[in-house]
Image (cartoon, rainbow, N blue to C red):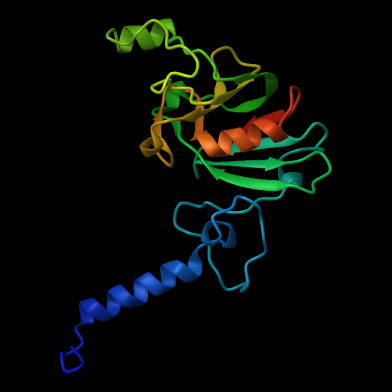
Length: 197
């Protein structure tokens, strides 16, 4: 192997792989969602715009905590009321603009193992879907936790289908990995302000 010539493709692949590792945010490298400053300020944002944001650019205050959902970058940002906690989670977002809602709302209810019922519009699009999936069921589209928003039918919830995260795959809700919604569920409260952009 030491005597084999180095190909351009092999060299380029190695360089891209190393550059990709260097560009990962500190939170992705450490398998945590807790923010830590990058070791080097030369680390650039990745192409999906999954980036750290400041709450002051979106909220007047963090009273009750603040959740920002960036539909474009498919990311959810959470700041605690005292700003000592900041979390950044990858999300699934609505499959189309007509299912997407933007603006200010808030958390109005928190539910462990929520029951799922498709809306009339969902049943029209997918008539073979069940009328109800009980909470705690392995195939429940709402996962293990849900934060109900002030808009009817809109939620921030978990999912058992991890392929959906990072994609346009929902019927209007914002989806998180179950372990992430469980963490967010503990930090957020009824009254936490929510902004979807």
